[in-house]
Image (cartoon, rainbow, N blue to C red; front, side):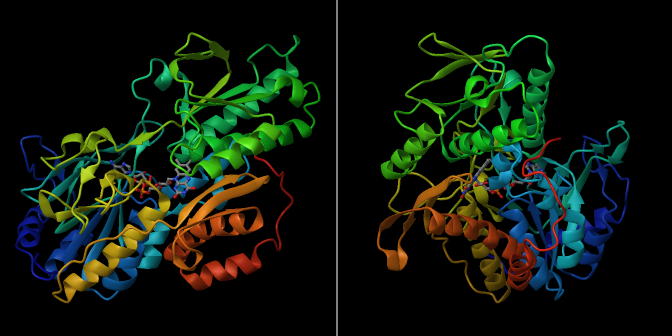
Length: 478
Ligand SMILES: Cc1cc2nc3c(=O)[nH]c(=O)nc-3n(C[C@H](O)[C@H](O)[C@H](O)COP(=O)(O)OP(=O)(O)OC[C@H]3O[C@@H](n4cnc5c(N)ncnc54)[C@H](O)[C@@H]3O)c2cc1C
């Protein structure tokens, strides 16, 4: 493994970058003017390009920018198709309306300016490993005017961190009628549908129809379960703002459907038992061992032929890596499209390309399954890669990544938090719930924020939290 510094490819690529507008391949894609890349190449800086600014990628570029970028030891760039970042585990709360997404979003352009990296707006649609460049799609505004052209971005080291997408396993109607929770836009769309459904039901002449205010959540993993509990509270809160023709106990029905024999199949049974008990108290219907065979505009059909009417359907039953990775210029991928990586997080067929987060299949010693697609894994992999890139600069070999499972927590909105903590002083696995569990749950988000803003800023915000807030509804109403 070569260290950073001089780079044959960079000189070659920079020569092309000096000729903006020159067609580089048969596909006649324009070369990006890329002033930063040119400057980086001219200065002989090694170019690290990270694709995807999520839980893993944004932490990595921020900290690389702060260290290597600011000190002019490497040029750091982030390619991201979005304009703002929202930590994905908040999506169910956005969907339920219990948080305002704007208060948690981070602007990529500003983050890049503050932390010493370059932000390139666009979606990666291809890769040329031989010439070491990534192809970005053109971008357009709402009126269809082009913002950025289709272009290439050159790299010396590439990190792919493009996360995961919902896996609907090809279930008929799922794509058309169920809302997945992958992006802030989808979560906002679901929330708008929910509030609209309540407004419609409250204004119509006729009584609420069966299924009209029913929500079917397909998949009772952590996301679906957390959403069910959040929704129970927020729908009632919306109704309490004066929608007096709706009777929540009579009209609102939330059904959680799981194909596996029990909810939270990936978590210890004790967590599932505690969660099931609480959901029952909330009158959330739990269907275990029930497989959905079709999603329709007016509800879901189960494999046993039963039909559940539901105006709102959420799909949260599994994830896979984006199809783009299935055959990305010959890189090895598994059946879930994840890029197969070595313990060093390098892809198996190209040592200059790394993959982290949900889109990487990283081996886990002693386990047949790779590192799970979780925020804590994304955080640990980003931290590991930061240290490894620093080691490379010093000419040291890469060390293997070892995932540490700190346990799993399920937040049941304001009602409770349950989970288990693993390892450390607490022994192999300790069941926790209530206030302590909620504090630990919040720690994961605080760790992410600390990686993006620094520990001091996060501590200050936590202390200042609650003061000087303007009056706001406790749920999102628009
Ligand atoms: C509702 C929900 C709740 C969750 N709750 C928890 C939890 O409580 N605890 C936990 O540990 N994990 C949780 N997870 C899982 C966790 O969010 C993910 O494991 C984590 O976000 C993965 O990080 P990542 O960086 O790999 O991907 P992401 O955070 O998804 O980031 C990927 C980024 O890549 C960008 N991108 C995608 N494709 C392209 C492209 N072609 N070109 C450019 N950019 C691209 C996306 O816009 C995005 O910004 C939850 C997930 C969801 C959906």
